[in-house]
Every structure is written in C-alpha cells, then in structure tokens.
Image (cartoon, rainbow, N blue to C red; front, side, top):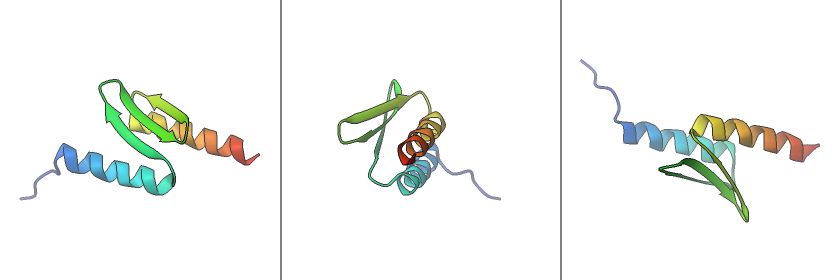
Length: 64
C-alpha cells in the first residue's frame, strides 16, 4: 500500500518547479495567494498555476 504525499511536500515540489522555470524570481505564498517577485516587480495571483501562466506571458512579451 502506498501513501499520498503530504500537501507540504507537493507545495515544495511545485515551488521548486516554478523556481527552475523562472530563474531569478522568488515565490512566496500567503493568505491572499501566491506572489512572484523580481527586483521591484511583484505579481500576485490566487494560485501558483495562474501565477506561472502570467509569468510565461510576461516572459514572452519581454522577449519581443
């Protein structure tokens, strides 16, 4: 019988993935959702998935 990973373990893995995908960005979670910051820029969304999607758009627009 296997056990499901704890919520803390899953959140830690998701944060590691986000950090690898977006080097230079810092991620944190609080009551209002997730925040990514890089220098003076701070982006907040209710979920990490939504925040990562926003960062992908931000990255794509900065490359043009």
